[in-house]
Image (cartoon, one colour):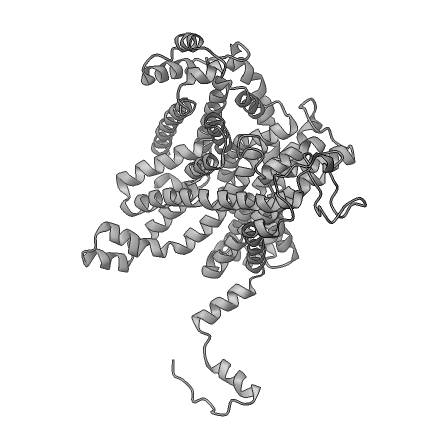
Length: 305
Length: 309
């Protein structure tokens, strides 16, 4: 287990460094970042000033090392739009995005696992078809559009829920459903496939033959084993949700890091965008590492390979 | 199989039934039966063909010019409202442009971006996946690492940032999406290549002295075809949804092009009084992505029924 952990950790660190370099380079693909920072109306002198101020006249590797060094100390640069450290702008909003991601994940799991299990117990019946239809619709519905439709029906027509902002817990209901529903099909398919496979295995037949109660066989023997891949998927999907929350946050004006990243993009506030890309990527790296660990803990076979 | 003697008088239907029960169904017949008996596949295929026809025939069947602004005729309601008119069956938008015509031209944008981005990502991802799967070792390590790094990057945000920096246009969106969403191709091709790398016909080709490119292209690649098609449908659907999201956020295809995502975004302002401006392009997007997904699921069921999940 220690050997496996160290290997995974080394890989995660390597990925983290590469990811940070990619996010650093990302905002330079358009050419001169000084021009982008200065805006369209800037004179050559102003651009030169900005180039000096942000150290953009140095070699790219030096700039990266400097940036990474400061990022490690929690200094993600300064936003030229707010004239404020980026960390102060993002820090307070992480909570909103995390809450949204977590609520969406819970929604997806609460909807998908019972449906997936039921569909596996009674394959090719109406309940299986309901599960399949739910998942096929979820896969095809654009999340931002689903959010808008909910907003029109629940917010504007029925006036049940607030349509924008992040003031209270009610503000999170529609965004979480819109974001979570898109992830539901993946969970449902995996649960259903896992349950079907486990239910046809020998030890389930043995447990039944021993005369165990059906519920006990189902939950203690079958679900426990079928759920292992779902745990791994949950970590990965949580990472994807945080990345995808930018669209949903923008639709509902939910003040998380996705919304601030979008706002920053529209006003060329590049250090903020860069910081959000970096944070989301690093978070994903941490999540996949944790999911690998949980998996290896639950399924000893993985540790060997 | 031994052919049973067949009656020469085939006039009655009874004899015909007998004939069919004697002859085993040919592989073609099994395939046909599976294809036409698969409801999801047939539904997906029919809807997709309809949308494709709508896109290709848009210049002939669209009732109006999708860019023609008539400010005196703005925000006309669709035909199912009391004040709707047959001149504009789906109404007009805030600039007085015919909504049905814009919807038809919008299908072209979604399909073009879906197909082009899928082809680009398919070439990149399959090449990486097959190389990693076939050679293994160091090549596999490097390519797997690149895939891991790519998966860690938040797609939507990276695409938004790149499009915002370079400037949004149809070509930019296609290239950005194509270069971003090759991950599933790479992952699937890698594991399927690993599975068939050691089978006898590959070993035989090696023993016969075939060059590596020849083995990859004529032995490995053709056997990946079913998997490739299934992933291709998934990625096409993903590209279409991503384009809609980018355009919706204002950093994808730019106005006045009738992208469905852009139409939803333009309808937001009038959400309270004319919600159909959001519902119509949204339903179109939903139907397109649904049909592509059903087609993909269907192809998987038909070609490899054992992997149904």
